[in-house]
Amino acid sequence: MVRHPHDEGATTERNTAMSVKLINYALDEDSTGDGIIARGRLVPETIQHLKLDTYQREVMSLATEEELRSALLDGTVPDIELAMRGWETDERDGFITLKNPVYIVDGQQRIAVAHKLIAEEKKVWLGATVHFGSTRAWEVERFRILNAQRIKLSPNVLARNEREHSKAVAAIYRACLSDAAFALKDRVCWNQRLGTNHLITAVVLLKTVGELHGHLGPGRGKRLDELVAGLRAIMEKTGEAVLLENMKTFFGLIEDCWGIKVVTFRGGPSYLKSGFLWSLARLFSEHTDFWRGTRLLVTADLSRKLKIFPVTDPTVCQLASVGGQSKLMLYELLLQHMNRGKRHKRLTPRLERGGRKEVAQVPSRSPAPPPAD
Image (cartoon, rainbow, N blue to C red; front, side, top):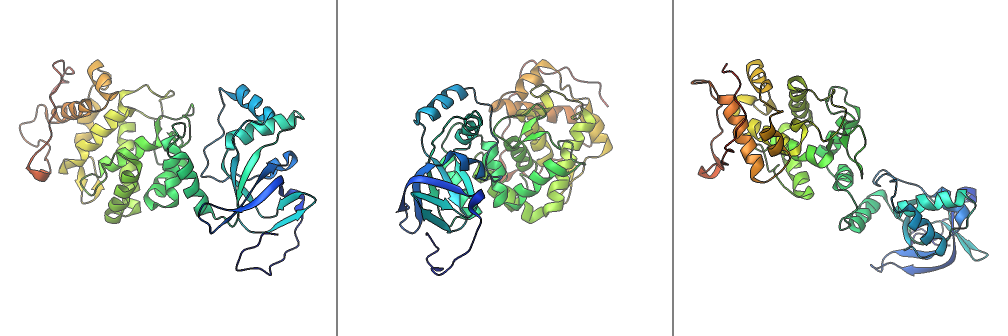
């Protein structure tokens, strides 16, 4: 029996009917030399007892499922990686029974297909490596290490898992799932693939919130770790409630001006594309007219002016769909629109950091200007 090294005398009677079992196994040290692992083959009837935690991506509908089915039946797939949150085992008759909860760390898609094959009464022998004495925090980090370099893992899944360490990301995630006052409730993808109800991705949302508060902290990072660190610094200045309120105000304004809840398909409106969201967020961040302290506040006059910005104009649609200089061009179009027809009360820029301001050349074919207010 494998026990925690500091708990050599521990014995617990447990019902093993719901336990995971390995056959043809061997115990070994892990790569650090401090932990214990078991390598073996999963007894097919016990695969159903493997547990899944929320740091995992959802089970996908695999285009290559037939190939995976064949590989599983032939025994030519790589071992899966599991973690047992405890140390209790029972070794007898050539089996090792894992008596504590066992979680999937790597191999969820293989296990999902294996379930189907077992339901068809086919024998599937999956190789597995099991880490003993695991914790949820260790599993999240192990999952990140195993998947960060894999192209197939969506950054939105990694963003979702950052809520384990970031209060800002956790607060934004909760709002997406449960805040009825948030215009994008249930419309943000934190999963591997976009669902039919999703309009933007989690990474785009985090970048937008960071850009919106860019004047308050380093929220304009490109990498996920930079975004998370920036949001942490920003929330230290705003507090959680104000950060969320600003996010809801921003997207609530888009809902009032052009509509979010009425959108039934993703990839459609220019104003929900990443380039437009970035440009609008920067416009707000760079001008004091939209703020009262750390709170985003858009007056009725400014809201009416923004509402008549030509979001369906071909030039706007094109600029909203790409990045780089196009975002700066769209930013300049928004700024010109908000100031057009005004000799006084033009938007007030913040003091330019570093003495310079990056300005993009506006396309020669600019959107047709609306009537002056």
